[in-house]
Amino acid sequence: MTLDLLEQLQLAHPRFDHRFTIEHYCISTPDQARRLKALGGLASVNNMFVHYRALLHADSGFGFDRTEATARLGSLEREGVVFALHSDFSLVLTPISPLSAVWIAVNRIALDEKTVLAPGERIGVDRAMRAITIDAAHVIGRDAVLGSVEVGKHADFTVLDDDPYEVDVNDIRDIRVHATVLAGQIFPTDN
Image (tube, rainbow, N blue to C red; front, side, top):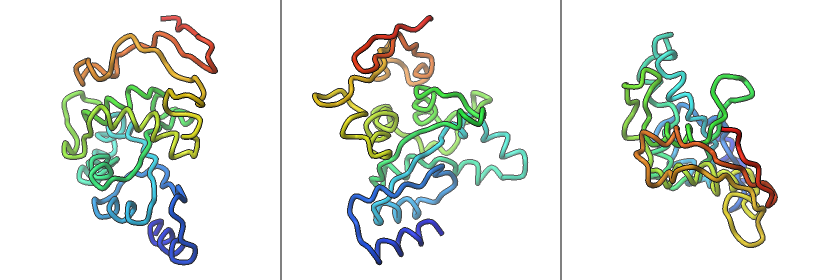
């Protein structure tokens, strides 16, 4: 229904950079990812459910096949859809931890720490890091000032104790934040 509405809007008033975003891009099909791309849409994905809620949902009548279809990041990436990762922290369902979101996107391991959900929907570290930085800024329309460290942008970033590109993919969620830099001011963590 959402894709049908986007199609109608594009037919009535075509726009190239409309940044129409499907929030909580959850259960989907690869064809829907393809259609989203064709319509110029974006996705904001709560992939935390893959780890924290998938087995619970599968056991509660939701079904394992539908649970595995949650947060199809690989399909979005293959179709070239720009997407961001987010959590439902305000609802206390999942933690606010961007590196955990990256870890889940790369590994798709359930809360039992052994079940891999839809391995074909995993994405690489670089793509996952983009989904919490520059692509997330693009989705919210702030990529001109946020999301990457460049001249003319806000100097907002975190300093990590390890490099997510260098550690084992299973250890990404355990990387500690050393400090946060906000508007050029350094705020060390109390770790």
